[in-house]
Image (cartoon, rainbow, N blue to C red; front, side, top):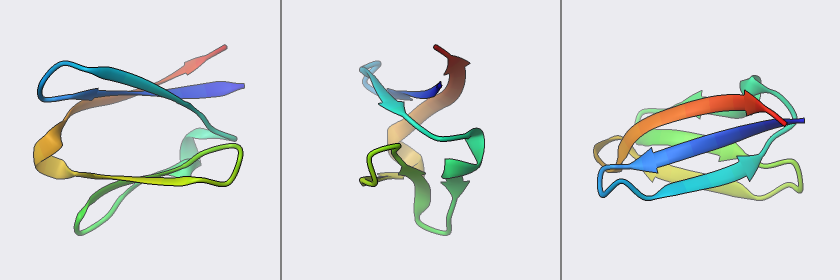
Length: 56
């Protein structure tokens, strides 16, 4: 199952299990990640250094 790894500008890494890479969206406010268990995580564009998807 894919995992979205979010690296913030303060270099903290957080991992979220997702159904597919389509669960990560760029919005006007920043980024939106829908996790496999139904939670929605939002990040401002200024706070995100990078988002990558890896297969676990």
